[in-house]
Image 1 (cartoon, rainbow, N blue to C red):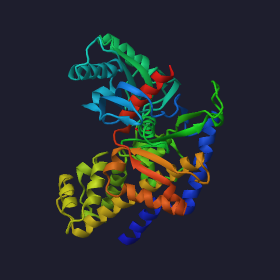
Image 2: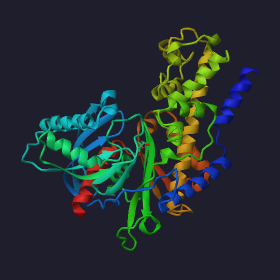
Image 3: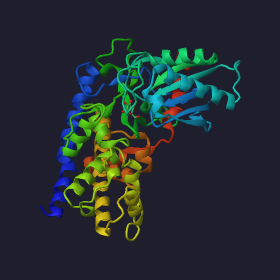
Image 4: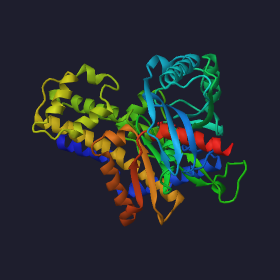
Amino acid sequence: MASSNILKNVEESFSIPLPEIKRIMERFHREMEKGLAGERSSLKMIPAYVDRPTGKEKGKFIALDLGGTNFRILELELKGGGRMSEPKAMSFVLYKKHITGRAEDFFGFISNCVKTFLRKRKISAGQKRSLGFTFSFPIRQTAIASGSLINWTKGFSAKGVVGEDVVRLLRISLLRHRIHNIEISALANDTVGTLAAKSYEDKACDTGVILGTGTNACYVEEMSKIRKWHGFRSKDAHMIINIEWGNFNKLKQNSYDRELDERSYNPGQQILEKMVSGMYLGEVVRLVLVDFIEKQLLFKGVESPILRKGHSFKSQDVSLVESDDSKGLRNIEFLLNKLNISRSTPEERMLVKKICEIVSTRAARISATAIVSVVTKMDPKVSRRHTVAIDGSVYEKHPHFAKRMHDCLQEILGKKASRIKMVLAKDGSGKGAAVIAAVAAATS
Ligand code: GLC
């Protein structure tokens, strides 16, 4: 088969035309309903035990933001009137040994970081602080400040945490490290944090999205529609629902998706995440590149042992490739050199760029489709304005991701697309944990 035909086939296997988008939206709604009813569904629809903040919350809070490549601790002051101070933050790197070792060591590392932070911020043992804990994994929440881990995602696998209350584990660890002045008053998913942080200042914000190492979203649901909720329900009350959309599995997988899934540590799970998020975007591209090399369509079939290795092509590389508008595509050439591909023609580099575009465009279209599904769950005719707060490296750093999402939104909704405002909510997950700690403090 001629190379242009093969490229066309690949392009087709990654395309999501409008009728397919509509089909996905229907299935997304069905899975949401099932999840809310407590029936078997790929969408867990987890009640977050918290509504949006009022914007009036005040006080100094600490937030602990854990769930991506970096782990952050921050302190910030909520001033009321929707205003907050710039957070004072410290970042720590989570190494493989932390995320794949024992629970004790995992939480021990976090406690040591908290100790360092308190020392650095000169918060003495006598000064009490409430802490909001953003833990960005599927948690079966049982109260605002407790919940057990359902399963790990994003390559984390510390032993002895699944099924356990992560707040309890952190509390025990803090005490073991002689930290007595920190009260963990809220546990939140990063999407919930992002929504809380943005809605503190913008009342129209009702959806929080993460497009980073992993992907997920939360939104504001009417309590009466959360059929599996058996707790107290006041009339007109709302609660934030963590969708865990990364696990949505009603999407058509092509041969590359299936290969990636089969080789992953969690086959059959996080199917949407594997097509969209930063942990996997580069890997999908890598599998297509290897296939093209094997078919002698790239680099004269000369293999790169580096590229043969899983996850050697990163999502940052996808961004770099798609940002290269130089004559001769020199940045792509430089990247290929690093991958031990020392000879490439401008046409081949163009083909690499095209492959990245195909893969990341699908990711952006799936993201937009999922967002429209969530908004139309709350407001089927999109008759009001909605702010969608988005945080994460893929949305922030990829040169065309946001624009492609926007274009797709318009394709689906036409003029009504202008009622959905997608905004970057930088560091939302961390700031939001502090906001939720404040909501918890105000309602306790
Ligand atoms: C994964 C986690 C989810 C989190 C998302 C973004 O999908 O399961 O809880 O929100 O990553 O970090």
